[in-house]
Length: 369
Image (tube, rainbow, N blue to C red):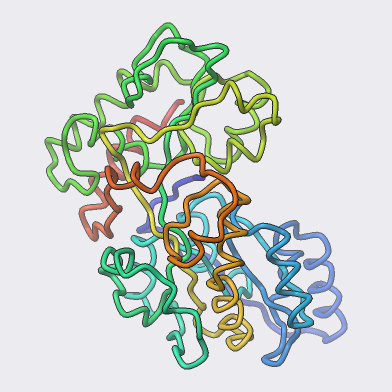
């Protein structure tokens, strides 16, 4: 889901100074109305506000779930979306948004905990934490006791293939090497995802810190895969897949199945290659200085009610990976299985070694695409 600024260059914006109260009020009102995504945020809600400000991945919390929460608690959810951890992180670092709750992936949970960007989770305000699978918690080595984060979903990107157009194919990342599909394929605009796919295809870890392995993965992506791609796209590859412009895309199941028609589903295959790939655990985290901390806790608790979690995962065709009792309440088969996720590897916070990936990605792969 993704556009990638270099992490080293993040804080950018400053404040303003009072001139006239009426002018400031007018400017702020105009910004809220005209500011696009920011216009939905209403980020200055008071501590006892009836509004919860959520910043979340595109295609990730069903409207029906949000509406049930609003009705039960008599509140309004203002919901903004992002398409990458990097864009979310950049915006929050810059002081934008006024959000209460965000949904970062594990490597960014780790980064943001270290930078003091979250409030602590008050377990006394949560009654549904016992529903979370201990095996998932074992993977959250960055926050195993849920001090700052509560797991939302454990999943992975994969490959969608239009089988009406591509009848014979290997279920492997090697599909992006096929020159006969040139101009009909896309991969995510996501450095860790694409480089991670190349690394596992070559037999390495998605978290490799070996410069030689990273260079080999760079060469595979830049010299073999990239020439066959239309573009790197994290914002709307599912739309291009639905229109038939793209026949093979790397992406998330929800971004594909939310776009295609019921009739197209019979000609769509989604799979996680047997080589594996990068996995993610996205978590619910309350931002430092959030104005609606109690309401954020209520939302976290609400999500992990078994019937709500089952509704969420059924809507997007997910397995109920995080919430154990929800598995018995699901009514639809998922588009991929929890067993497929056993082949994947969580992306770690690489620290200073992330610069090796930045250099490989920005120096040639993304430049001049």
